[in-house]
Image (cartoon, rainbow, N blue to C red; front, side, top):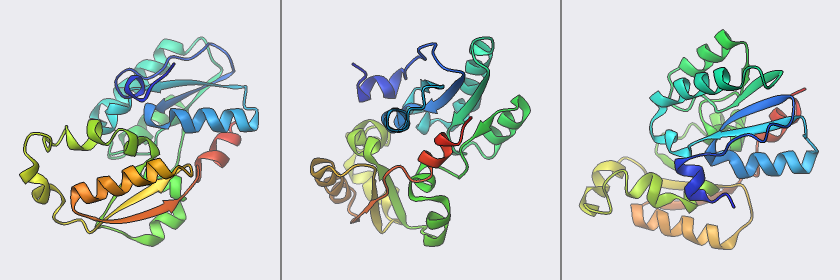
Amino acid sequence: MTTDAILTTQGIAPKGQGRVLLIACGALAREILAIKAANGLDHLDLQCLPAILHNHPEKIVPAVRETVAKYRDAYETFFVVYADCGTGGQLQAACAELGIGMVAGPHCYSFFEGNEVFAGHDEITAFYLTDFLVRQFDAFVWEPLGLDRHPELRDMYFGNYEKLVYQAQTDDPELTAKAEACAAKLGLQFERRFTGYGDLTPTLTAIA
């Protein structure tokens, strides 16, 4: 069984089935597998890199390049299921150089909500969580920032934020309650937006 902890630190390897290899963030694994199953996208195989790269964007491009090199002879083509994700345009440049496509948008918070809709919000004081990040809040937010050891630093990190926006991919009351607890822990107002899979579904279904 692939757990959130495995997706965070290890990712998942491809099955060697399909013509197109998706190289994705581990934080998107469950959503991608759900879209594949719902739409019969058997021509797509999935390689997830460790989700914790979300906290180390400088490692994303080298990991993508390494994956393409490793599986170049096994698939007809590749598609990167990351947005820019803090790489400062480097991931897009690498994909262009390699001749492969990638998801449009600055980050997953944008494409989950829909890039046009997200841009329209123009929110600079919102902190975002997805289903995965709610489940892994401690591993991605609380512990890396040292707040488990020094909770007094909370306001230094989050003093300029006003609200936590939970972008829900699923209708799960337990996740909603946990997201609201995360907002309280950070001292932020809470807002839930049901996004479903946003732009991810049409993006994946359009891959030939």
